[in-house]
Image 1: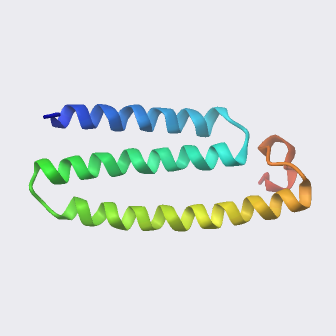
Image 2: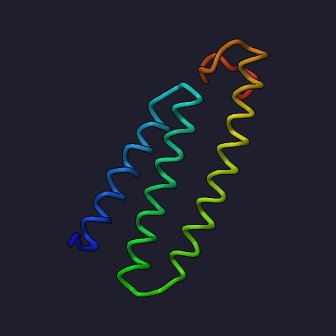
Image 3: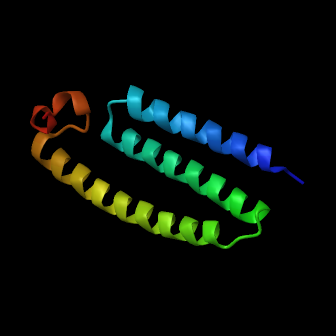
Length: 100
């Protein structure tokens, strides 16, 4: 049976890959997928702690976090479609209107 450390290491690996994808990639779709990896890493850690502490609080928060992630994907993909239709690109470097 995997211990809590195994789940935490899996969460750390997923979180690291997600952060690297957000910081290093310039494609909007890959950035959104990397954000989902970060959300899933947090969900794995919450579920592992919930299981090992015998508490339902972490599980409830995981379900809430999955709901938020689904809404984020829906809004993010809608924005990507609109940006692609107007600019014909999905690369962040070529979108000058998004700079502050």
